Image 1: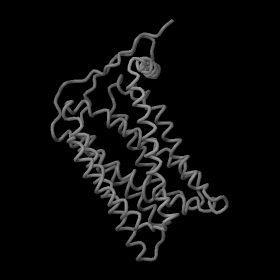
Image 2: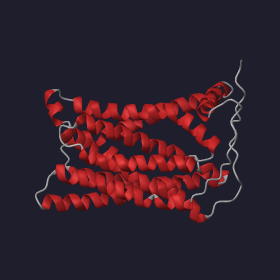
Image 3: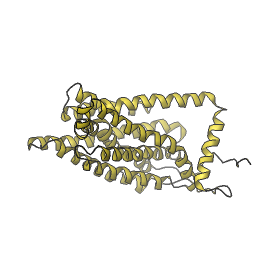
Image 4: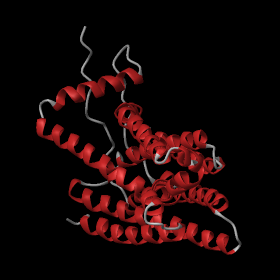
Length: 311
């Protein structure tokens, strides 16, 4: 027996978004960018390879970097598989904001707990990297799903650009705090095993505190819909994903574009998560130099994101 057709259109209220609500939406990028900048791009990736998994790397050169990239790959694969189903469930239940809160809490906690992974505690570090990255990427999906609800079609690119630009400044704030603490720590004779866990704690605190405006002012506009008779939310979610893939055959160019975009983004993500490792292991950058490098990159990226929002 064929399954009933699942409505592909999400029902939402038409209350226009205020400027404060749009800013609250964009501020989530400000909040979570500290995680991507500190953990994935700059400080922790190099620390994982150079300190946490250093013994493994001495026995088998390159293994630490492989473990790091595998951890990120596993997390991203899980998100790739789970995101359509979780998104469909959130649409039916009209509680994207609840899902966003859960992923935010999970990312904040696992980021702070990363500091418990001392040198040699590779499995613990890998576990928290995977959990935090799944939560981070899932949160990115949920916050993005609010954009069509708060922005008119003609303003969507502009508002998205605001969010990206603000996000880079959030990364700059977190990096600036970490850089100041690293400078102080090194002046006191403290090494990376002290200041990196503290940097992770700062990152978690900044994420949690600056995400607050999103949960205070961003509204849930979706209207809960009943699932077909005999369906659970989980089954309805899987069915909707299945039907979406079936419908994609009618739009082959769009499907090919999305596949190419996925592969392109995978390549970009690979460069991002190994950049600091390369700079440290090959170019000999220290923590301060890594942070300054990424701060400069963030400044140019913020300007570009803001400008291209008007393109």
